[in-house]
Image (cartoon, rainbow, N blue to C red; front, side):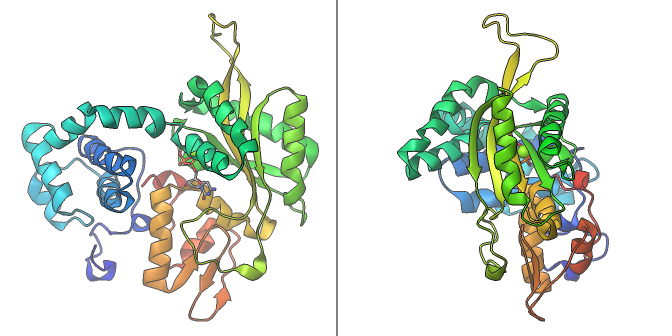
Length: 355
Ligand code: DCP
Ligand code: MG
């Protein structure tokens, strides 16, 4: 990827945070193929090489129109030899033989089914939890118990129904707290693998007590199927942290919630609910904006935003803070616009962050 300032104003940036990526993908035929290649590498543990395909796909998703001729790729960033070859083959033959081979590969299909489907993040959590302590085997049990439900995509309607449930519980515990949807649904997606919420508490210290109280309430309502509460390990004195791809230190919980079905009922089991994965995060008020930006994603957008901050602006960004290395100061932000402004970036709306 070339230096962005070396490019003319109209050129596509190599950084996802300088591109507007809506869900309107005009190059799906290419991006689907590149993502299969990336996923296959990830399933084999080759995270590094897979990122090149992810970046190529992400760049193509931001284009305002479909690629018509191969020559159009000449001036585009983030395309290595491999990605170009795949695009060329698809342009000429309609498909890529390598991608077809992967899609038919028994190993890929098995791996994808066992950990690569929409519930893979949950299973990764289960695996790491079980490694740490035998008592956490309940995570694995819950994962299998509700496997069928949690591997099904969650719709926007279901997410809205959950927002009402979460909001009701949060307000009951603390009437001055507010709940916002983050993750893919904030970016306008119609479906997600879970529903992510961020809680804002105006009084200091409330962020540490609100989640246990909300969990208790869900339990008493008999809608809690599984909960893993992670207490805050956030320490202002330890900022800035230097592991920018890592998870944050805020108080959070990973839940499985029973959601009543509005229309159909599962006739076989006489079951009128489905299990849904829900994540709640409660940062301290003065960290809220950075946490909101981080939890809104997409993962690739945030990865590039942090990389851009570090490489192009000498600043460190994570879910907790924005730090200026030149002046050794933390940069305050009341809104997400403030963070983009500190980085000298045009503001990108949440629905344009689907990189
Ligand atoms: N995230 C984070 N720290 C965590 C967990 C998640 O910063 N401990 C970020 C990564 C994502 C966003 O929060 O950008 C939401 O995570 P998801 O895995 O739920 O991703 P999406 O919501 O984008 O995808 P999906 O629609 O599949 O749920
Ligand atoms: Mg999500």
